[in-house]
Amino acid sequence: MPKDYQQKKSNPYLLPKTVYHRTLWVIRDYERMKAERNEILYSYSCEQDGMPHGSDVGNPTEDKALKLEQIGRDMEAVEQALLLVDDDMRNGIMNNICYQVPYPYYPSRWSWQRRKQKFIHNVAQNLKLV
Image 1 (cartoon, rainbow, N blue to C red):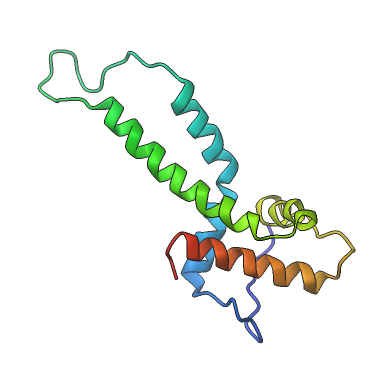
Image 2 (image 1 turned 45 degrees about the vertical axis):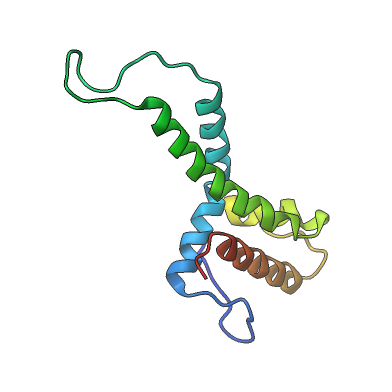
């Protein structure tokens, strides 16, 4: 896996290292979050939490709601930032971040890099990390 690099010079979207990496991993986790959200929404579970005849009070509905809310918040942050990216660049940026696919030849590599940095910065803002 290539090294995650954030341009340091002349970068108006420079993030602290930990925030940058945390944001990258939220973006990379987007597809899994979509699958998990659908699984929670459309699954039916009649299993109970805890041991049978135990004293624990289970709240599976509350647990699901809390999990859905957290996943929804992270997904919304990525989706809102994607709306700010040009239509023709969305797939290229997501593929580069998630799967390390090289950018297409047009426009220039620097244009892709600038737009990727802006996208990552917007996701970090949406997550309220900056």
